[in-house]
Length: 49
Image (tube, rainbow, N blue to C red; front, side, top):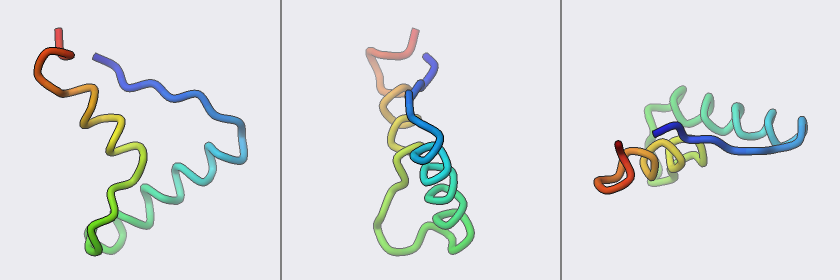
């Protein structure tokens, strides 16, 4: 299923910066960006399809 999130323009900028920073450093540190968490939930068994 699609992972959808609704945000204002300020939070949208922060979400994309968070994802960019996490991928820039290889995801080291144990922090999972909000967009990746949304994608993970959308792909859970029982939700897909």
